[in-house]
Image (cartoon, rainbow, N blue to C red; front, side, top):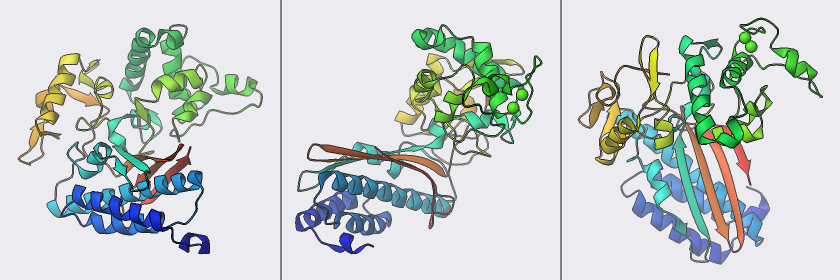
Length: 343
Ligand SMILES: [Ca+2]
Ligand SMILES: [Ca+2]
């Protein structure tokens, strides 16, 4: 800790105490509360009087709180010998408990598992090889977006968008119809090349031929790129309704997106306290996924993950600071930070 951060701000300390008490109540009985107290004490005794720096410190502290709760969740899952990310988890409940400090600061923490969005990298086996269903899923989705976001998608060809995205990720350098993937990218100034590897961020999509920032803005609420490798599809227990509507299911080549009634049935199970599970899972809260969605699902659904996105927003006076972080908690004691952005 830097000498500056050792300076104690008394009103800040009172704030910390209150935040800690609230979190103890939220996490009553949870060992995570101990981690949380340590994290918050560390952050909130920072003596910087500047509201911007305080807001950023508080938002960063919120991320640490989320990490501690995620680590505890992983440890609890290990001792229960049952893994599932679901709405009832402590990390998900954080979003419903905005935390105010005595000196008027406000902290909001929202945690999402990677499975709550469609992982574009899960559309490629081994991160590089297209599944026959990859192209069908993307074309149908982009066709649908022409109705949902006509200003952005109506002027673009869904087949070309799908093909260009696949070529950007797939290992080879050729287009299926002939020609080189790089022709377009080499004509740009400065020129670049197709990545030929898993996507590293959602923003990277804007580099793909036919895509731009407008397209990325439409896609962003639906997609993730995490985990970068080895990940599966959507988690039916945590995805919001608009992502559940991308559950692509069927048999053979005959796949379709989940209809509204299927999405409703999944939400009903969740709201009733149930959990959707793999068909062979053995747990009293489980409803086999097959009972809610007929056929196979592509990409195969995710029920648990170690990759989470944390958005922590602190309001100090008129200043708002937001920290967005992605973490991999495979090792819950020393989680790996995958991304960190401050706004
Ligand atoms: Ca390629
Ligand atoms: Ca290719």
